[in-house]
Image (cartoon, rainbow, N blue to C red; front, side, top):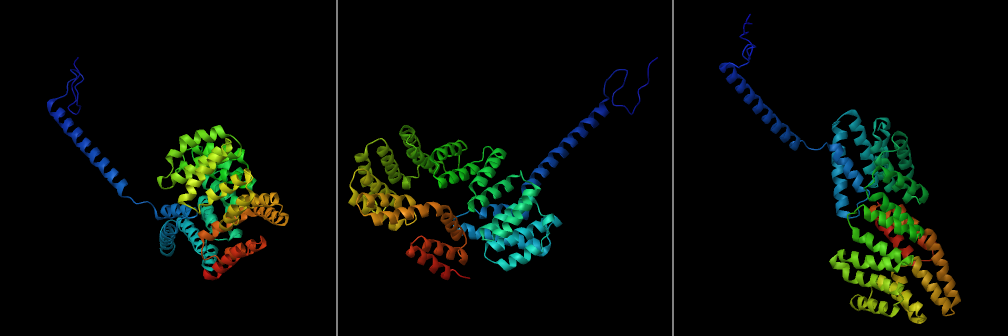
Length: 423
């Protein structure tokens, strides 16, 4: 028996063919559906293009970059933008409860960074830290720390570490703060964890390199430079220069020469000529060609008589050749320009000792030991002074530190600047 075809079906079970009228209806429906899909896709794409980033996300990015920015105009613009975004969120209650609390926390950090301690403390007291993200606790910790408020920074960072110890922003903030506090082993520990979380990021290795350089560990600095270069940093030529210097320090002239010939072609053209000559002179001295090294340095000093790197190396080479009196003259000139260079003080001490001026020799060798022990502290304070020109306390601390090292001129300059920039 033949089964009757249901007129509601598109296909008759008996012959399997679509009726002409139904086929045209189906085609129209398919075309209409395709048009709807295309229009929807374009609308979604255009919508995604036009949706601006959340104000909090922009402010978070600005806060992260602010603490490492060194150019004053860019830094000032970052502060202005971040403060505007965060203040608008807090005053208008613009966002979820958690976003507003995060904005309040970061705004407190920015106020502290600007030297406005009391408004920062007021904002922080009104912020519910339990509603703030671990990442923003770490960002705020760096802002407070950069302003010199170490106690608040450590409180915020501890809260972030308890909540998300393995998050990248917490690792980054912990490493940076530990480094500035002079806690080298702690810095290395945080950096190694950070490097594991972001294996291709050069930044943890840059900080590791700084620790090894501060300690004078040239062999480890060579390894850190190599790791840094493998991760393709933004400006590899600076790391290449450091690698060559550390290879020279450990006596590996073959590798130093190889990197000199291969890497220094990428130097900034405006600086490459004299940098290439000075580095070539270092390698030549290591290879035993001291006379050729002096000729390279003389070519630099003919064009730039006060170039401190060239003068420093010239004094070292003159001392190696036994020309003690000329070495003393050159190194004294460098010492005036670089009073906190521990290596220059050491070379001067050696030169005076060989010239039988033992009292002066002991004076410079003692200063060398003091500078070696306080170099990290000086570098940290001077970095903070550059970031925060209104921080009078940092400048006074530097003045006292230089005074204790027997460097009254530098002490006078920092004490004068503390009065000039006082709020």
